Each structure stands twice: as structure tokens, then as C-alpha cells.
Length: 94
Image: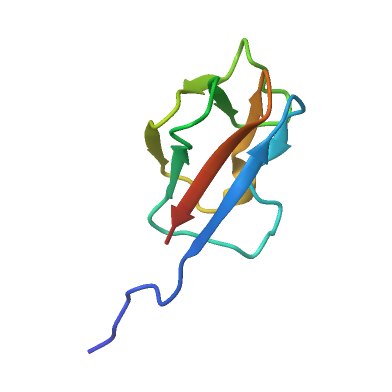
């Protein structure tokens, strides 16, 4: 019998700024079950999420303080984030 469970996970904290950036640019950090994004409850503004470095505060999906979303992506470098002012985002996935 084979055990197909993933034996590791990724996690981190991202300082989201006014410049669009990849959530995590480490290419070998894969997650077969997606990545959970959680906006810090003390954030003062939304974080905007997109699928390329072209994401803006007008085109991205808004994630407000204390909210979370799970994105079904295989690697964290496929998620891009931006904010109107410096905000904090946490992530975890496996």
C-alpha cells in the first residue's frame, strides 16, 4: 500500500506593497492541495490578488483584513499581490 500524502507544506508571511509581486518566488515550493491566503486582521486596507505581475488595485480580487481564501494553484509563484499601502498577508499550503 502506498502513502500518497504530501509530507511537507509551505508557509510564510508577505509584506504586500504598492508594487505587484509574486507571493513567493521560490520555484520548487509546490502545493498539490492549493494555498490558503489570510489577510492580517490589523490591515488597514485590502490586498489585491491576481495571476500575473500586471495585477493592480483596480483589477485584482480584494482580500480584506481578517479574511481568507484558498486558491487551487500548484505553486506559490503563480499568485501575485499588491495593495494601496503596506499590508501583511500570511500563507500556508500543502
